[in-house]
Image (tube, rainbow over the protein chains, first blue to last red):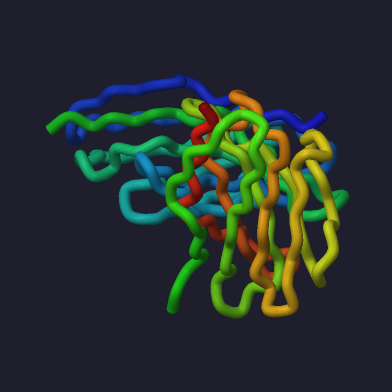
Length: 111
Length: 111
């Protein structure tokens, strides 16, 4: 069964303090690993797709990386507006487009 | 360009009642998926519709049913509501095989 575990559950940082969020996954043939950002009361907003080990994607202060078992979302010099819940999800190669999500990491950046 | 729109935004129902939630996909998208997100959890896949047919289903009982219309919009129906059905219901649209884009959801409260 496909499974995603994210850690930590919650993380508080000071503005400018860089850190990383972890996503451990097991999947029967990876089609893609996805990172989404979710603000309170909103739907998830797409950030990145990673397809194979060694791939990296960047967007502003965020960089996503992936190995065969884990993905990391690195946040460099974060700002208060980066505060949100970050969700990781996997999509298997077989079957339709179902995403299996982790429980998310709730990130708070204090000014 | 309107994104994924869902209605209503909030809904309060009583145990045993039935509810219908609606979703209009992003322009150009032909596939609609529904997810249930309990408080503090990641979204869980309910089912996916493509070409007006249910293509894949998650681990949800038959009380959950859906429909896709010729204009690609979709409905989610839940019968015999239970307290545990209280959640944020998310609709996501995509082109077949593409990235899922989410709406802001319908917050359902069952009392």
